[in-house]
Image (cartoon, rainbow, N blue to C red):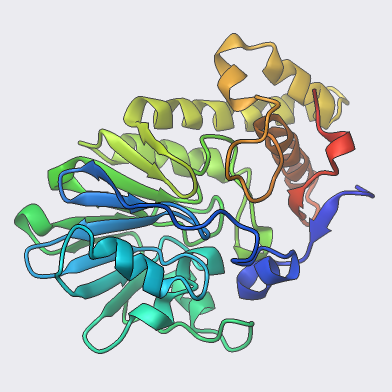
Length: 315
């Protein structure tokens, strides 16, 4: 794997180590309504989902550090209600970096127990982010139109990926287990696993009901059918990796096999998506995840691969 952009554990310090900071990233854009009381704010890291309840506002993910003031400015365009809760889909600093700017008195921070452990660990350039309430597999918050459902089905991007559902508005915030509608970044240092990802996604697709709109961790809003197709592609990626390895083939041969399926072409584009901070094209990300899958299948320590040198991107 020489010449790959292979790094150690991502954690709260890894993004800074690879230069993924607010500088040079797409800035925050104007808040947009997804459905009902659910809104999305794009830019400066991961998407921030805004859920307006009867008496306050819930933020799902808070972008990179120093984004709090801009997030609040966008929220004030749709409501004057105070921030009452922050839910983090996982522990990476482009999703919880502004927690400490926004989690003042009376603001409850919620995350999965595995994310909580990393968020509260000492060290890292962004300091400790305290979690007030955590969950293991499922949690309900509130009732009626204010109800929020939190689900955890297993490892994928990390081992703390939470799916956040707003049943009344038939909308889900997926975090980075589903970002850019392409095969996601896998962070083994935070418990992520390419081999576990399809099982986790399958459990989400069949274990969550009543969702029409899926907010990606980075990027746009998808339909439930698009999320289902994303599950199918990642299942096929792992299955193809295993079959190719058994036959003595390599990662690029596995990629060629995936490329022969017309239904997978949307996940194998060769152009960089607008605003994508790292990882290359969808096709190069698929190749990266085949490399991760091959390593896991061999029983090797899986690498964190943020991106390939452009000359090595598959065409």
